[in-house]
Image 1 (cartoon, helix red, strand yellow):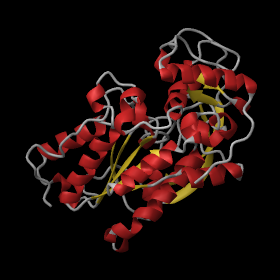
Image 2 (cartoon, one colour; image 1 turned 180 degrees about the horizontal axis):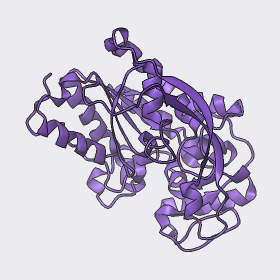
Image 3 (cartoon, rainbow, N blue to C red; image 1 turned 45 degrees about the vertical axis):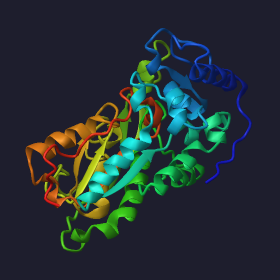
Length: 345
């Protein structure tokens, strides 16, 4: 997929040049970035860049998109980790897929597209990784290694072009509409792999409602914090959507797994939307931090403690922000599914 870029705003272009210098190691980032300049001193990993129409972006997302390649030999330069031996995401992903496959479990990798690439394509068009179509090339590497990837960029771009924002303006997560679009796309991809859908139907109901949030990116600004943001979410009712340990479907992921379910309100998050689309309760393991390693460590602990835990699993959906391919602070480590080698498969 090719996303056409338009002319870059000169103010944002100046910010972009600084981001690219940071990525190259030429300068260091000592405070948050804003279209009008620095707005205070906070940790560089929490720097915020302001785009058009009130949208805020993580500087680390721009850093990720500044690399034309970030895997293989290029990972040593691109990875933002203190553990260079784990800089390349490919070996860990391939290893996880192999372990699941040996147990008869399918893996679907669902990277959440970078917000700036979808929302402010003119800005993103000046980033080398976007111009080089780095993500598409990386997904080709994954496909070649047998990993199934759901690339949401095309469907998100279509929705954005139709005037339906896939992301919160002042928060780093997708919007209510983005969450629903992702869940519908995942459901369409995995439905045929879940024969349980033919015999177990849960009749959930859905209703769109207005919700007011205070975005995490706005809160990171030292001054000029934006007002609360109003957006629509699809609330799921007709029974509590709870994590079911006996479900054939396991979701593991970062805070996109939890947004609008555990925080930013409830009953409207990704597990809720996927339960509604499939009429099936999933199980999920989510983290508010990086999902590169933490959720697989949680899975290891669970599968080691309960030897037959993986026996009922048919598919694992691994959901996280695409920027984690370079921004995971602990890199990408190979982690066993179980120290006993169990799982019932």
